[in-house]
Length: 240
Ligand SMILES: Nc1ncnc2c1ncn2[C@@H]1O[C@H](COP(=O)(O)OP(=O)(O)OP(=O)(O)O)[C@@H](O)[C@H]1O
View 1 (cartoon, rainbow, N blue to C red):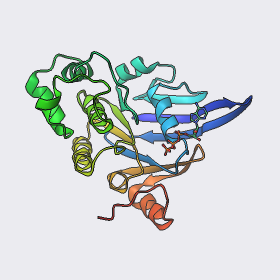
View 2: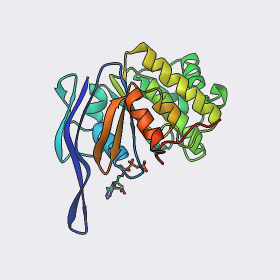
View 3: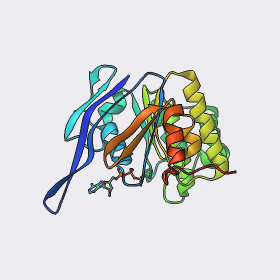
View 4: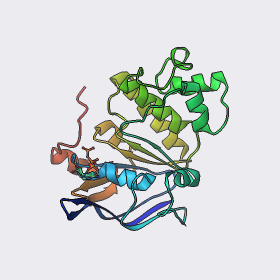
């Protein structure tokens, strides 16, 4: 279980301190899917970065299965069982796709294993397996690859920041299926940051972040109607 207690992250602008994440507390149970949503600039990505260890909290505590990971750097948090996919994945020079997946899995993967992982995120394995992870890959391809790296290893908790960003509709459906699979197994907890109604609808609980604070948190059936009623600009409605 993840327990976040009074988490705060401040920035300094023109000599003035401003809280971007302000006193946020919540829990994610084992096997639970929590979707974080809310208006642009509300502080969602910053909260995710603090949870991943990319940014250091100015206050509060993060506990994973009772272990205080607040002071852990990004590598230690990965070791403690946190996996994540960036909103804008980094690219690596001189690294091939199969090497990257093996690194993510923590062991040498066979070609069929790599192919299976790539297919799961909608990439045609044969075309990609030997390719370099560099600027020649499109944004959508990078995004899918990044998601494959998170899925390559078992984590206690996976954090995805706007996984829907920059991918086509077909790949989006594949992605939804992957999340549903993880969720059904109930072996990993999931935090998804998203504006997409289809992703929000998968949540066990929804947390709305606004102005750096928790504006609402509760079961999906309680929170989702309030977002739709308000016609929240943050929710991209699926009107197919
Ligand atoms: N290092 C920083 N210095 C100054 N301001 C920052 C910094 N990091 C984030 N911010 C500001 O903090 C606010 C929250 O940003 P954040 O990216 O966390 O929002 P978000 O909820 O993820 O938004 P979106 O839905 O658009 O992705 C924004 O106003 C952003 O400009």
